Length: 265
Image (cartoon, rainbow, N blue to C red; front, side):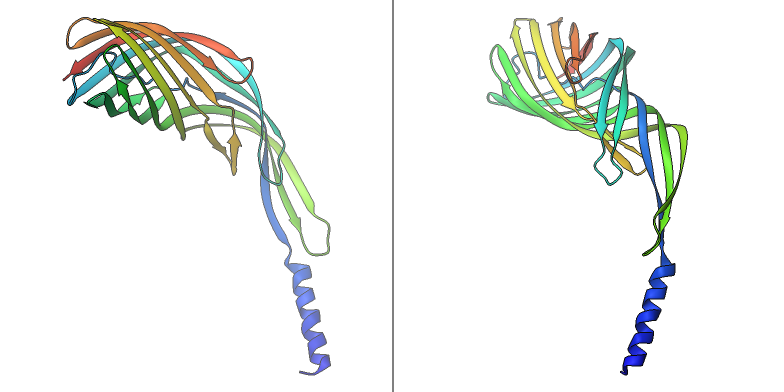
């Protein structure tokens, strides 16, 4: 190929790059107000379950939680990162329901559960169930319903190889209601004598929220439950207790929980 032809091709490529350019948009989330729920409550059999036996349990509860607004700040990991100021809205009175399955082999048990509290959650459970004490771990997914109001700026940009980037931005407000799936984990322990028991459960999750093209890195929510109860007979159990929820230092809020469980063995 002659030098003259090479020069023409080179000039043609440069001209194409000059006029091709690039365009797109990005969104900055400045403030976000969102509802959050307490981490789910999970516990074991609350009694010395017979070895090589299965237990089915259905539980309904009323939960009254302190209403509070908790301020947080997060940062997105992308080229347009900036702080997003978040307000968690918590509290109120709600109802929760749950179905559990537990199976014991010698001193150990495993099981699963499906529940609803501001969204569906499900989990696997395993641990030890002894004469007067039980303890275990659990992990699962929380498909939580979240309402969000946010202030944002949308920026359209355009640039090419030689011309400086041009950008037009517009501020706006919006709201979003959706289900978001977040993993949760936790542990529990119980002490029981005759028909009475005291149980402790702690679980945590971090809301996995996405707005526009951004996934926000939100603070974890940890809830502890301390419950006392009585097994009236083989099939019915009554319980009541307190919940303590922690969202970063030193943000705590409190609640009450109580309800009834029906067993089938």
